[in-house]
Image (cartoon, rainbow, N blue to C red; front, side):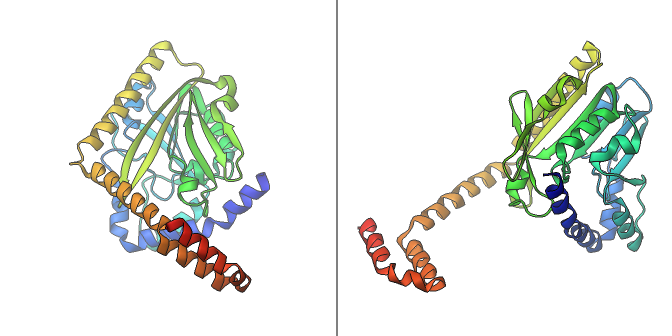
Length: 316
């Protein structure tokens, strides 16, 4: 699987660079403002930074893309190291449009973090919407854990089953989904890894939550995972757990206060799904499928009269 997943990943790089090239070119000024967020995109992060006793707090952002989502204001000093295996290509895009990033993006694969940065260097290791883009995501999580100091935190935010959502196109070779006291990473060929089980005794506690957000005219189901590396005090674990679930509640309240927008969107999706199913079961649709199949395969013309008769009988 190693060769296959890496080959598919490498073959998809141009498409990923193309996406960011179009995004930046569309409005360079707006993209530059991504670096000026008042708060990081992951609302869990500021509170966790506050709970870490050290200062500055060393944060690693894995798969950061050209604009790290961990940028923002914090209650204490934070030293951010952002890395991405496409960092060099992103730097060229930024230079082409006169954009300057406030942090250097280091060229590094998630599968090689320890080799790049060394073990036990960071208080918090973070990845958002990028784990399923890697060629060996279990190894990425293992490297993040090894790069984190004892008692430190690994944060993972990902769309649930994004591989299936994207029909396993491009970088999306993997599905990531919640499980009982664990989470699963499944390759598109069906191979599944229970991640906490694979990490064995290195994890002191796993916290898991789910929330939904709007993305254009779609709904996205997200999963938050926080791993506390072995070596944390009981009080720190209690504080992290309390903050984690308080944040999950706030995420849910934010959706509930969306003026019914999410509820309307869910209702619309349900209605369209029902209409689609009704159309697919209709006589006209099935007749069209038969005729189209016969046109594409002349050999099927022999059985077409029998198929049409069966259709008519089933609808009578």
